[in-house]
Structures are given as C-alpha cells and as structure tokens.
Figure 1 (spheres, rainbow, N blue to C red):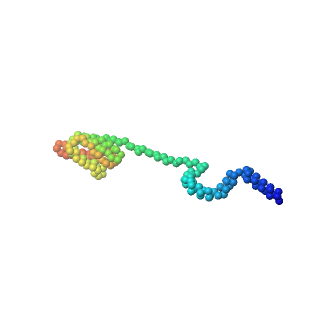
Figure 2: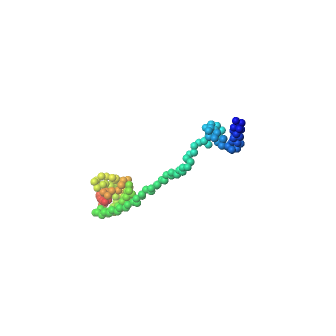
Figure 3: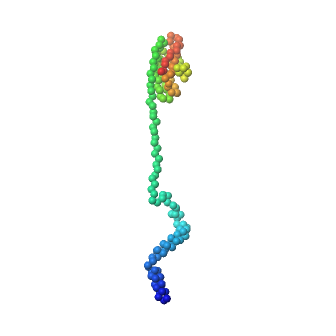
Length: 169
C-alpha cells in the first residue's frame, strides 16, 4: 500500500510540476466560467467593446449606389408658316410662328388696319383687337396653332371700312 500511495503522490507531483501547463488549467477554468468572467468584465470595461460587429465576419457587402438618370427635355424649334392674299382693297402678308403651345402672328397690310379677328373655320372667335390704323402689327395667341384658322382684318380703303379674309391653312 505504501508503494501505491507513493506512486500516486509521484504522479500528482509530476502532473503539477510541469507536465500539465498552468495556462491550460486557466483556459479550462475560463471556458467553464466564461459567463461569470464576461459579467465581471462588463463592469470594468467599455460596453462598446461587447457590441456585436456591424458586418458579420467572413462576409463582404457591396455598397448599393443609386444612379440617377437625367433625361434632357426635347425642345422643339419653332415652326414658321407664311401666308399671303391680294384682293381689291389691299394685299396682306402674315407670318405665323408656331412655338408648340402658343403662337404669334405678324401682319403686314397694304392699307391701314383698324381691327382684326382670329376665328376658326367654324366661326368660333379665338381673339380680336384694335390695330389703331397700323400697317404692321403682331398678335400673340396663348394656345396651340391649328390649321383651321381664318384671320379677318378690317381695313380702311376710300373712306370705308372693309373686311379682308386670310385663311391660315
């Protein structure tokens, strides 16, 4: 029995003396009581060190970037239409500039104009005005140009006011 007890002590001394590393004992103790060590560490260390990482380890994330495609609006150039008429009272020249949403009419007359009307071919009045006996004047219309308009000028010839028609189609 003495030899058994003696051999047991020898093995115990042998194990404690260096065959078993003390760090290994500490690691096993730490693994066993890791929850307690973590709780103690939270009291003495900055809590942000224990925050979970924002990006999981081992994964790569591509940044999503938004691209904004800007389309430039198509700007239509103005379209110019020229009309003319000659009758017994005077000659008329009209230039219509279609700006795709509105248009203007520039008028030249061989006689003094006192008034004017712009109608559709179905006699619907779009706009009218005075010209104060002018020979050249312009009119701006705030709607789309259509090919069914009739321009009526009231001209003075030989002391009388006479209507003169010009089809703008």
